[in-house]
Image (cartoon, rainbow, N blue to C red; front, side, top):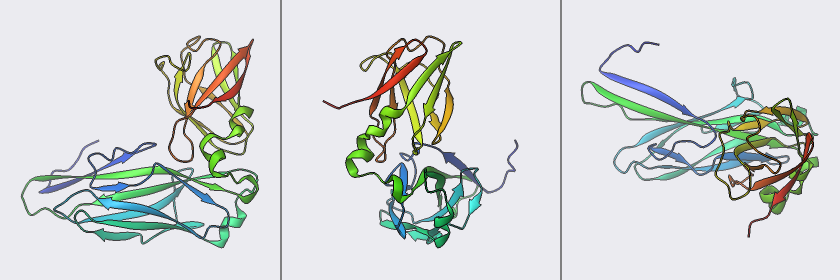
Length: 249
């Protein structure tokens, strides 16, 4: 892919799961959003980490396929100016069309936030504009979680793991999306080579991990509602492994 040379170049760098916000001017206060049924809007805090320059913050929603949408969710305001070192908010607002979404499971969307730097007055300047992209889950009333369940839900124990022909398949019968980010052979072992995987509600997903790398008591870290990473301990009996949530000491 080629980039045309001009006096000012803008590079859009997209980030997923955990956004690389350390070098971003516009920072977001979370790594995922939960939109519960009945909520008309959810407010997200943003801040301009640059102490000398104002930035524009542009927000929008995408569906699970990555298509930009304006319903049933929208970002307000879609664009705003954030002064140097200042804080602000964006709202994800729902519409009545939310009622047409499945009510027996979560629905996945993506919230996007792009920073737009002020135009440079210096010649031949390279401007880098970072874009944050995080998961947004709509959660129907029938599967609502309280704060304890959202942090360390017992629904996790319904998950099973199947080993067959050197492959691991995660079986998720729950109504929640499950994202695994690390794998170990035991709770205190070093992480093994593992590709983070999200498994949709009421579905199965293959885990990309080397054959026989996890042993008979594999441990995975998953991402909860607050961005925490509790551990799931599996106990394997033959080809089937059952799950238990490891409580923090």
